[in-house]
Image (cartoon, rainbow, N blue to C red; front, side, top):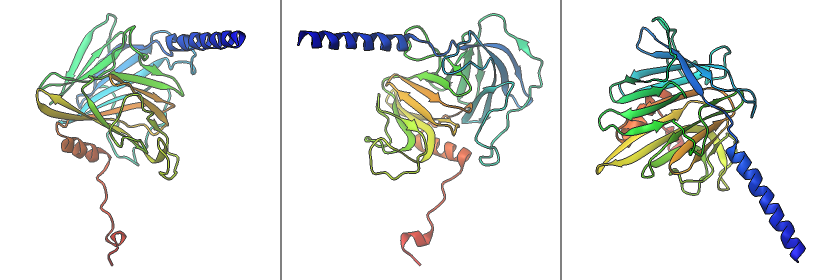
Length: 297
């Protein structure tokens, strides 16, 4: 009995040590912004260089291109991809949208850590050069909607961009209420709950069990907050058709994607109906049900 107990305790100790090592392992070491330029239509184009390579989940892609543009008064786009090699994206002829343009201004080389902003009508994009991170804030009340900055206490990595593994995170207030990330059979419906599994992987199966992925992948969520007694909503779409896990911890949200690019769209709302209108303006309006499908002739 004592021997069995010792063996069990020894096994538990080994598991805890392995778990601690895995938790402490950094999958990536982030990137730094080394140059910026602008396009004729007011977009920002930058280049990101990896800080320190490692081979966990494959080698880091050494040089990335950053593209930021306020496409409308209520929509901001942030696109990050490999500078040297074309990567898979949702085809532009399947989902028509603006193509990133080439810069028209001279390239500005960045040698010292700085913080700069690209303000829009309501959404403000602010970036820190080294390690690279960005925040999206609302101009009318100064509230932070999305923040990718990390520190030693963060339970997630800085920006990671490998051939078959991409990771990026945002901090969130505990009071935020998130909805979306379909299509799956979550026990709580469309409201997100901390530590529930959110995997987007189209499996084309029926909805007979909980926590199962279904026919479509909709990597978009709506964030609804109480701001001084007034409700404010915004939406976040990651336009990426690869399989992904989205880890929601209550105070942060992490995307872990197995390919493609980071192509974020931020919709400023500020009402839930506004968010839906702005989102469907980009991806397409829902089609009405055919009259015959309702039993009419």
